[in-house]
Length: 366
Ligand SMILES: *[C@@H]1O[C@H](CO)[C@@H](O)[C@H](O)[C@H]1NC(C)=O
Ligand SMILES: *[C@@H]1O[C@H](CO)[C@@H](O)[C@H](O)[C@H]1NC(C)=O
Image 1 (tube, helix red, strand yellow):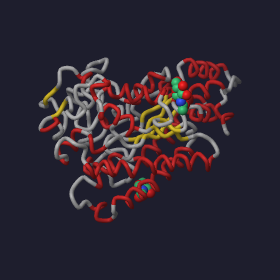
Image 2 (tube, rainbow, N blue to C red):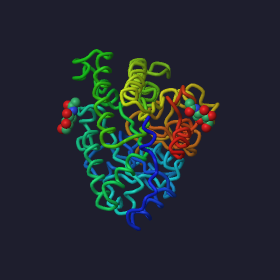
Image 3 (cartoon, helix red, strand yellow):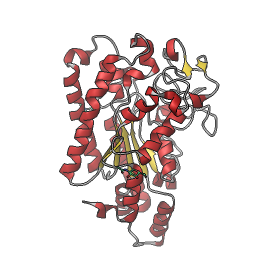
Image 4 (tube, rainbow, N blue to C red):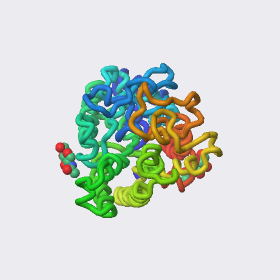
């Protein structure tokens, strides 16, 4: 086990560094986020792309009631994790406000539209693909080193919490984007999944090499059940079969990959978060979770409000708390809260090999 790597250093090399460490201890550990629109805190606002959430009614329930680039009516999953670990929300890496001391809180590198593969989301043109997100993370470490030194930066990174959310777009915005897509002509679905997992392995290994020691890895949600897919591919409001099949193939292999990597490294570095099961709980029985529907998006148009994007001209539900889906693809803040609650205290069915409260307990002891 390498729990010792998470040991908090109490040696103060200079008064400055000593203060920094005290601060980072009282403010909680750093948090780094990689992935797609489910976890993007607004990087795409700074890019020339159509994959953006910077207009009303996005952000309508955010504390400022303004759009921020998050694909939510309010807070998203990373925000709620930050809340749980007692940290400020992560700023988008491209935000000019992410500077000086704020860098020590961590950073969010995620970019809506991206996937595991470079050709995923090409229709969005200018987005930060995952290899670029990892390059930015190296650049981040250089910037922090200039502030607190190399050794302290390494410690900050080793003690940090990481979240990576990838894969949904490799199906929705690639393989299944159009009939007879290039990838679907190249691969049968099971072979495509094997290819995705082999590429995902490289990404996770790289993250480990760059210093990550606690990484939450989310599988895909039930891709066939989102309002966009119900509108396009469902007969009677049942989840679209082919996309469900994709999730069913992908998620177990991702868990297997996580287990393999942990046993190769000899430590619990990666933690599988079963986003599929977490979503299915309230999609299968929305009323039990206080939702009136899990099929109709709060913001959108057409059947299930699932056609096109959520824009100022869309239908908008008056009470976002009773909708599981905010827009045709993304959960509402209230659904995100249920998801993050399960991250915290879920059983091994949801969080494998352990949940976030257990991780926090372990990491605070060492
Ligand atoms: C994706 O692009 C990056 C940067 O150009 C490259 O390093 C990487 O090998 C590419 N990945 C694949 C699977 O082609
Ligand atoms: C998850 O959290 C709960 C409550 O905090 C705890 O009792 C449980 O044992 C944890 N499960 C795992 C697998 O870590």
